[in-house]
Length: 203
Image 1 (tube, one colour):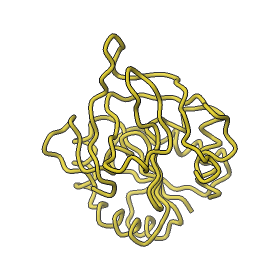
Image 2 (cartoon, helix red, strand yellow):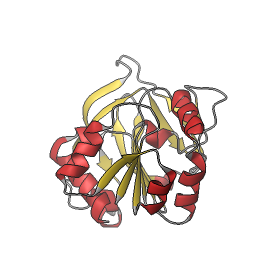
Image 3 (cartoon, one colour):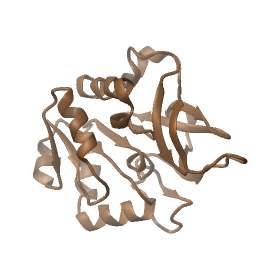
């Protein structure tokens, strides 16, 4: 069973619907016991970094999330669910992230381009792709759907598994041990997104 963490931010229906379409046993939950029982965890997130962290803290789910990751349970972060894995964000000074991956989330610098970066864009997947679980079987530069004004800058660049170009090179996906995350929305990225989620389900 895959647990999609419900901590009061955003509509989780599209993520749930995508996993159901793949035939996955999925539950949207804020129940610690369900999260502990789950084989895998999905951490979504929309809106401001500080609001997401505030909601996570108030939900009381941070300990079980960290405990699950420490135990080796696979976790997939999506959008701001990727960003909160880091130490903090320029968007919300003073708000601490989960600190599961070291680095900061920074404002996109894209002179002459509109921010947020919103819509379809191609990603460049790091080679060798056969070692990257989420991107098995995908084309070299698949198109995916983004909506964000900030992007993660890890201290260790080797955790970056895919990038995209928008005024500058941006982090599109990361992987570190049993943690994987995408800045883009796989659940809104058509067949490519479903293939990525299928790789997470089956990986």
